[in-house]
Image (tube, rainbow, N blue to C red; front, side, top):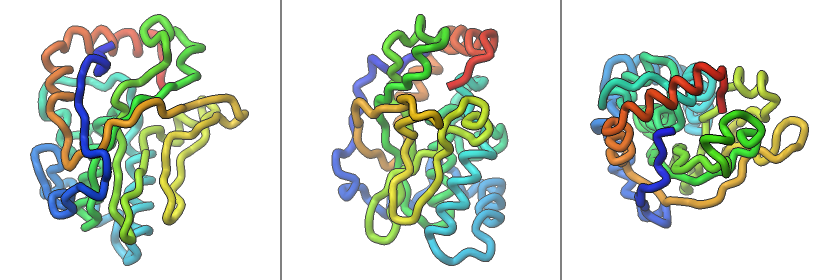
Length: 233
């Protein structure tokens, strides 16, 4: 697997130190001024006034309409642009969180990124064990939004279809609360455990992207393994 384990990318420890104005800006990754992204946020927010209702609509869209792909095709830097991710309708956690963050910003909700090391216990019972022997997914990416005066993490990584097939709990937004990867599966077996936090980022760090692009052969080997084994997260 193209791994982030050797990186040392650390963000702000306290989300309150994020610059909220920058967390509303379009940039190389959150290119929400693109007409496709603008059209999508118009559809999602039409008729909604409460920021939480808009945030829920964005969350559900990214969770389910952007299918989680453990090994999506990657050809160049454009694969980390929110407009391209929207067009492709699939992506891994970094891509989904970029699009999610971009849509929040397009709706006027300050949004940033955060990263974690998470242990995915079900992976240890699959053929992934030989590639990820400890089950740790390094630098798992998710969004964080500033709403009603506080920063709240929102993880829309796993789509409902995947969760239903695998017996996972479906993540849902509850007003005023964080939405993180579930600690247990539907049958109450261990699922995810946050092992390490890497802080908060006002934009996507290109070192993640460049690490993959500099070693596309390893990424393509990983992609081939995932597809051949018909495995997913």
